[in-house]
Image 1 (spheres, helix red, strand yellow):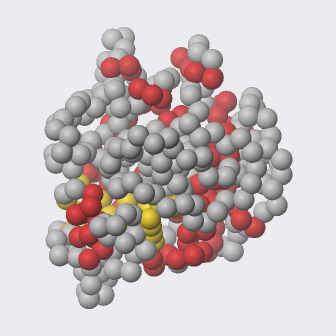
Image 2: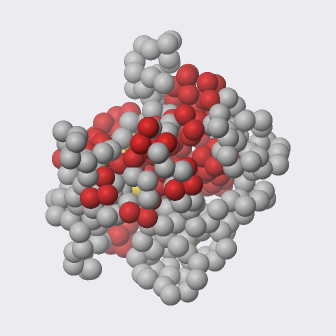
Image 3: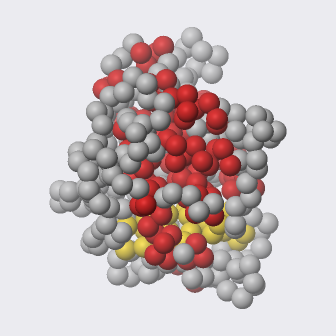
Amino acid sequence: MLTEESLAAVYDLSYASDSLGLAVREALQVIEDVLKTHGLDHVAISFNGGKDCTVLLHLFAAVIYRNSQSGTLISDRDALPTPPPSDINSPRAQLLTPYENDTPVHSFPPSPSVRPSAGPLPLLTGVGDAEPGAETEESPPAPPAPLAPMLPPATTAEITKPVARSFESGVNGTSSVVLPPLKSVYITCESPFTSVEDFIEEMVDVYNLRITRVSGRMKEALREYLEGSRGQDRDGRGDADANGDGPAGRGVKAMLVGTRRNDPHGAKLDFVTPTDNGWPALLRVHPIINWSYRDVWDFLRVLNVPYCDLYDAGYTSLGSTYNTFPNPALQDPSLPSGYRPAYELIDGSLERAGRARCDPEVKQPAL
């Protein structure tokens, strides 16, 4: 069950003084600006059940709910100076496990594009000149202008307590939320994990996703989603939209994608990057492009957002069952499962250590 409290808490978290609060605020404004420009009917989200797109989906839902309640948006608030990056009372500090406390907090490397100063966020920032999925040798451009927190930081209690169990029905007087249908596409890989498939089905119901499954390479899959012919909805039907008169992705102008800076081919992406010549015309929107591995897990855990249970079994990056294994960096023979959960990975650069090399022509999505 999706609740008002769980969605309102996302904006509460954007007031926090640590880097997680800044990351949340940055992502919210990117989504707000895209929705203001194109409208919900013309925005879709790429959702494949992984941790990054799960974060993105909850952020997306929070913006939609906030707008429906005529609440104050990020872009409506007056900026304050950037607070110190370390705050012992921040939600992030409360998440440190005994294992993590044995290692300095700075062992979690920040994303390559740290937010060093305040500034406005451009709606459309640059045009990517590299085809998605192609390697480049050029240095990445300077990151888009960062954002500062808008209001004095909320206390940890204010942020975490109202949402501690907010996804559970009838707890603490929570009120359920039914979102409008959200256009979404699931670009499948060969031999997906059953746990991932089950989790996607759960999230389809929780977030009211109008999801279309498309197989194949990214370029062809996007074309099929936007132009139609072989996509299928969750019940195996064809890819007609709700009115039965066109492809499910008809009218979509912008696609929210959970790519981060340290993902393969993510270094040169901006918040909004148009597809290249020869690709379906689409704006790829990357609200969490500047997030680190640690940002992702702290967001999910602070807000108690459900995620695929494979991450608790030591998997840190998911693809096909053919090339995905528990992360060896999390191996712990003292545990019954043999592995610590994904959120205990200290070195974010090892996120894909559980992904085996495969045929370079067979690209699997990172989750």
